Image (cartoon, rainbow, N blue to C red; front, top):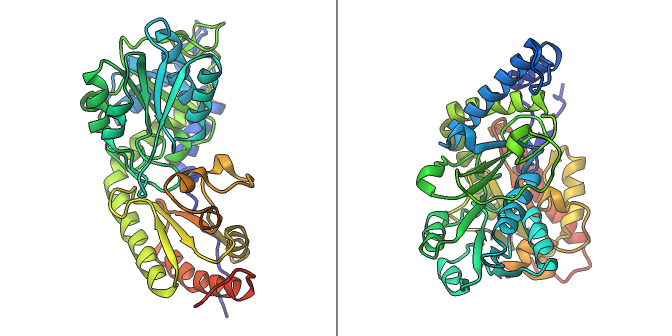
Length: 391
């Protein structure tokens, strides 16, 4: 009798499942330690202790000081706080912001707001491998420059940026530096002290904790103007009653991440390499998007030429394989991926691309199943396609 195939989840870059230990911590705080951390009574004091324990856990995960960690609703809010809050605080000093053309939409959206307010925005290009060249940053700096915001690793192709070198260039010109480390956090060891960034963004739901929780690292002394007013929570950087169950889960997940990251990353890289190499052998006219080496272990973004990416996604979904066409934040957009266009892919190539992102629970059996199903799906779609194709 045939065993029923389970769903294969290869969209960890969009979100991760919640670990059982994390869910237990969330439930404990939700049901038993439900006090408001701003309250003075004992229930509030217990909640406050949980909050500060979590702040310690998250700070340890990136080698920060606890009072430099501010809890938010997620990566997008953290990005907005960093970019808008620092820029607004520095507007009397200068009005020039430098970013890249392949940033997450949260950062690009914040920069667009600043542009509408009269700030000058320079968007650095990316190489064909998705790298922002340090030399381009050097050339972009001018006397009005105050802030650089460049992501640590791209959310669609996984390319790891030369952040250390970019930060050194910014500091030579006394510029503040923010990096979105949401995708890098699950895989890379981050030490904000050595890195010397002024602000850094991370999110809970990329490390097997609930959605709706994130954190902003803000280095002591960094100029900052709050975006919201009305409360003393998070030391006025981000007012509003904290999501304590989510925050507790974030802390638990951060502790587990520090314990398991190296082991998980090695396993994930081995599985990704098998998937990548085998697909390249089995399927013709396939292009790798991103740097072959300087790439997060869990990321594999491929262009299957002469195949409609949306049709391929549907076929895979019907075969119980979950993956994506790129950033989850751009899902449903009719336009081709701006990241893939920025690295030189044509609109047709960009629309023929699929992002596979592996994680903690990806197995060898999952990869074997994908290697059996995916080539068949591509062959079927190419045979039915009206696009010109020569096998």
